[in-house]
Every structure is written in C-alpha cells, then in structure tokens.
Image (cartoon, rainbow over all chains, first blue to last red; front, side, top):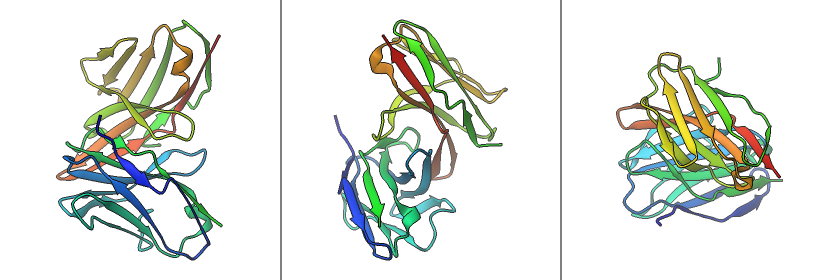
Length: 112
Length: 112
C-alpha cells in the first residue's frame, strides 16, 4: 500500500536554528499539506500546496515558514529561527483529490 | 464557536459495548467530512468518509446531518484495539485550495 514517508523521525535543534523537514508524498498525488500537533493539542493546518504553489496557508504559517517541492518527489518544510513554541509533531499529508488525506508518520521537532 | 467541536471524553467502555461520538461544525459551506483515528503519538489515519445518506463499514457507522451541522460515529461490539482518539474532520474547499479542519478528538478506552 502506498504511503507518505517523512524524515527525520525526530529532530532536536537549538532555539534560533533553522530546520528542514522532509516528506515524500504518494507518487500520483497532486495535493500536499503540512500540519502540526503540539503535544496534547489538536492537529492544526499549516499549509496546502498544489501545482507547485501554495494554495492556502493558516495564520500560523508566517514568514518563519516556507515550503518547497525541490524535485518530483520531495516536499519540504523549512522553519527559520526556531522558537521553543515550535516544538511539535509535524505531519506531512498528500491527497489525489484534495478531499481525504493520507498522513505520514510525522517528525517530532524538539526546540531547546 | 469552534470550527469543529467534539466531546474530548474519555469514553471508558467495556469490550462488546456500543459507543457513539458526536461532532458539530460551524462552517455551513463545508463539503467533505471524515472520521480519522489517531493512536498515541502516531499520525491520524482515515477511518471513513461520511456521507449524507449515512455509511457503514463493518462495526462502524457514520452519519451526517447537514441541516444541523452534525456528524456522528457509532462503534458496535467494541474491541480492545478500538482504543484510540477519534478525530472529526471537515473539509472546506475553494478552487484548488483545500483545508481539512480537525476537532480536538474524542478519546476512547475499551476495557476488558
């Protein structure tokens, strides 16, 4: 069964550093997403991406964040100048229709 | 009013019991509806889509009431393996932009 993969599974960084979270969506999917989940809280939408551009972003997704699809398979989330409150589980997801999403296993980001 | 609202639980039920979860959503223009399941520290996994006519998948039955903006999930003959958090998810789509909004989830614990 096709799956979304994410690397690394756990990233520890110092406050103020930049991190890049990587995702490989399902190969024939056209819609890509990043969500995050702070421990004990709900899953929150960050950004959606279609046809090589951002189609929607939340108020969380400010200038600190950027997404890129550098080649035909990878989808990355860059977080610049990380803050303590960026510590969360970051989930990548993809969809063939823009309706139901398939999520990757997540990257746990810990900012110290 | 929250975009997607659920009773956080926990619901503690004995094995074999029937349990029902409810969810309300605020955006009347929402277009697609889903129940996802999330195990502790794992990614959300699609359990089932929810249709206006109601739909069933084995022991699981989902229903949608658009007039009341209300979604339900019924689990019959609960198994220990059903213990998880059940997430009510609503999709609102404009053009190519598609955003799934998650409820906080309802935690289910099935006991012997």
